[in-house]
Length: 101
Image 1 (cartoon, rainbow, N blue to C red):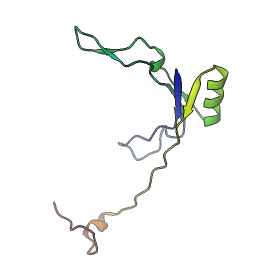
Image 2 (cartoon, rainbow, N blue to C red):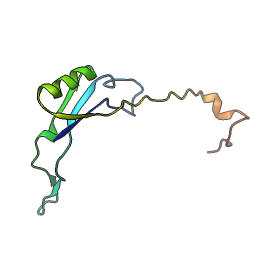
Image 3 (cartoon, helix red, strand yellow):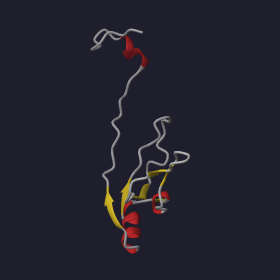
């Protein structure tokens, strides 16, 4: 079972960068989830997929994986592009598309 080490994206509903500086280790599922026939719930017998470990740095996460013999894959962190805009930009005359409701 391989694990993924990544930096999660910040919450889209907030403007802050809370919990986006930590690295997370998550185990990837080995088998697909099964549908329980009576109630229709999806389930899995794998308990490792329920574990989500947080680390302050990438080095700490890699050291933990090596120390415990976990095969891991590091996903590159994504840098958000900052799009600066002001309210008055909606009414500029040189807009690419005209402003409408």
